[in-house]
Structure formats: structure tokens, C-alpha cells
Amino acid sequence: MYSFTLGTVLTTLIAAAATTVSAQDACNGYKELCSVPYHEISTILTHNSYGFASNPAANQACSVSTQLDDGVRGLKFSAVLPSNVSVSDPANDIHLCHTSCTILDAGPAKDTLSEVGNWLKNNPNDVVTIMWNTPNNKAFQPSDFKAMYEAAGLLDIVYTQPVGNYTWPTLQEMISSGKRLVTFTDLGGDQSQVPWLLSEFNYVFETPYDNSNENSFKCTIDRPSDPSNPEAMMYVMNHFLYGSLNLGGTAIEIPQKGKANITNADSLLQQAQECQSAFGRRPTFLEVDFYNYGNTLQIAAQLNNVTYNNATTLKCNLQSSTTAGGGNSQSGGDSLIFSSSMYSSLVLVSLGSALLWAM
Ligand SMILES: *[C@@H]1O[C@H](CO)[C@@H](O)[C@H](O)[C@H]1NC(C)=O
Ligand SMILES: *[C@@H]1O[C@H](CO)[C@@H](O)[C@H](O)[C@H]1NC(C)=O
Ligand SMILES: *[C@@H]1O[C@H](CO)[C@@H](O)[C@H](O)[C@H]1NC(C)=O
Ligand SMILES: *[C@@H]1O[C@H](CO)[C@@H](O)[C@H](O)[C@H]1NC(C)=O
Ligand SMILES: *[C@@H]1O[C@H](CO)[C@@H](O)[C@H](O)[C@H]1NC(C)=O
Image (tube, rainbow, N blue to C red):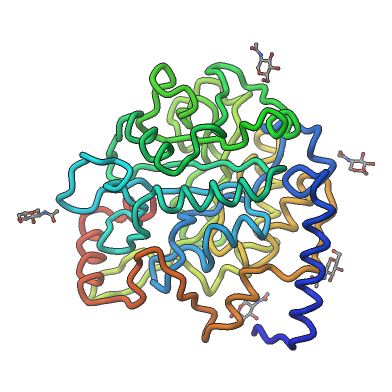
């Protein structure tokens, strides 16, 4: 599926270098977006962005830096405590895990946060959004998030939007102010304690996430159940599929990589158009698995009315081409094999709650 001659690779690298130079007067890669308010821009948000090790629970194929290099500007992270760990040193204790750290553990969250920080330093004209979810309804303290961000050196670039203000600055205004990292959390936010830790559901609602077939994507408000201002809020359009894997007679939900090239093509654009009709505005965040399949970034560009440069192959696909089967061996502490202990955890999780797994 991915085969490249050396010539193609060199041409691509030269093209990428040229893009970097011309991107200096652009905002999030496009000059036209500089004057557009943050809340009016459609952005690709990767589901479980940290989960890219070779693992059936992985929702992505490449590292967070590669995702950002390719044009992703929204990252969904899950804050999880490994079993039997209590928070005494949040910067090290809180990990990025897929529901349970036995299933997929991408290491202390601060390490991936540092990676995002380094990327932002090297890309001064970009605004990035991190959305936290907190599986198992574990509400961390605002101070826990602050400790992670402090350890990752991010406190000087975090952006604060006042509660109740649905009109955001333009990308250029955010870039000029140096506050280019937006953070939302589904639980544990309290802006009176940590002003930049925005409670997601004060600003954003989400469409349903537990989708198992191509026809199940709906443009309805799923979370929060009682949004404060659905007319003005931004929204996450969830557009990823779960399939079923039969393990010892128990069906568990796993990401559908094999269908991602279809899920992330016309189907994605169609749902965006349906949601645009339903809500009277384009989706702010298009949440996807395996963003490197299909046309995710082209579709976001189309929604933003800018021209996507599709002459450049995604870095993620160049990297995948060098490893057999498109699997990626980069790891932030993840197991590269799906061990039997992981199987039993999966079964336990599925017996406990199939819904949690989908988070
Ligand atoms: C926590 O540790 C106790 C004692 O070792 C053990 O019985 C229990 O199963 C552990 N819980 C989890 C969730 O791992
Ligand atoms: C809301 O935020 C925007 C962008 O920072 C600002 O221009 C506007 O004045 C704010 N509105 C209110 C009512 O504070
Ligand atoms: C999607 O990928 C599958 C398997 O990799 C392949 O058989 C199929 O032709 C692809 N479909 C499209 C529309 O690219
Ligand atoms: C899209 O961009 C083109 C060219 O800049 C412009 O003429 C057109 O009005 C824009 N359309 C919308 C809907 O913004
Ligand atoms: C790039 O986009 C153009 C216009 O949408 C399309 O015709 C062309 O096939 C695309 N090329 C690739 C390599 O995807």
C-alpha cells in the first residue's frame, strides 16, 4: 500500500522544507486563518492521540509530534492513574492510558505534554488544543493538572478564555499574545483555581461517541446532557468507529483501523455537512481515529474554505511505510505486543462496562 522511491521521499522532504518557510506568516498553516476567530475554525482532533503503539487498542498510528507536523491541531488525552497508584506526585503519577493502564500505557502525561511544548516552541505560529477526558469518572484536582503542565514547562503559553464568553480571539491575536495552548477537561476544571483549565462543557458540546457502524453517526447533543448555551458553544463531532473483537466468547470494542480509509473520507465530510445544517455552523473539532487514513486534513481545509496542499505526503504515512504492515514501533512505554494479561484486562473491562472502553 505504501511504496516510495527515494526520489519521491526527497521531493517530499524538499516540499516540506519549502512549506515550513512559507508558513511563517500563516496561522495553523494557512494565512487566511490568521483573521478568523478560534471558535469559527474547523480542526482535526485526534481521539486518544497518545495511543499509537502497536496495540489493538491504539486509535492512532503516529506520535503526537508527527500528528502536529501533519496538521492536526487538536489532541484528546485521557488522564488515568495506574492501578493502585494514588496521586502524590501528579506530574509523574498521572499517565496517558486507554481506560486502564494495563491495556495501553503511554507513560506519564507530562512527557507527552513536553513533546507538545517542544513542538509549539518550534512552531511559533500555531495554536494547539488539548482536551482531557477522565475515564472512570476520576476527577483530578485542578492543581494536579497544573503540576503536570508546570513539569512540562507549559505554564507560559496556556490560554485563558473567560467563562461565559463564547467569542474567542483570532488565531493571530492568540499567536501575538504568546498564549497558544488551549486546554479543556471534561472533569476537574475550576477556573477560580486554575484559570486556563477550561471546563469543556462550559464551552463545547459533543455529539455521540459510541458509534459502531457507518450509519450511526448522529448530529445530536450527547454531552453535556443540559448544555448551558448550545446556540453559542463550539462542538466536537465524534466520527470514529468501534468494532467488535471476540475474545474467548466475550465481544470487546476495538478501533476500526481497517475501515478508517472509508470512515475518514466522504463519510466524514457528510457528517460535517449534516451537523452544519443541524447546528447552523461547522463542527469546531472533528474527532477521528487514524487521521492519516482518508482525507481528514483535506476535509478540514475544505470546511475552512482554504486550499489544502495535497502534494505533500503525510509524514505519518512515510513513517508507516518503513515498518512492516504500517504498524509503528514508537513507544512511550507502551507494550508492543498484545500480551495475555492485556487480553484478560480487556475482557474485564468489557465485562465491567463496554461504555467506559469507548471513552
Ligand atoms: C490493588 O492491590 C491489592 C493488594 O495488592 C490487590 O488485591 C488489588 O487487586 C489491586 N487492585 C487493582 C485494581 O489492581
Ligand atoms: C470575549 O473575548 C473576546 C476575545 O478575547 C473579546 O474581544 C471580547 O471583548 C470578550 N467579550 C466580553 C463580553 O468580555
Ligand atoms: C481501504 O483499505 C482497504 C484495506 O486496506 C482496501 O482494501 C480498500 O480498497 C481501501 N478503500 C479505499 C476507498 O481506499
Ligand atoms: C471562500 O474563499 C474564496 C476565495 O478566497 C472567497 O471568494 C469565498 O467568498 C469564500 N467563501 C466563504 C463561504 O467564505
Ligand atoms: C489533490 O486534490 C485534487 C483536487 O481535489 C485532486 O484532483 C487530486 O486527485 C488530489 N491528489 C492527490 C494525490 O490526492
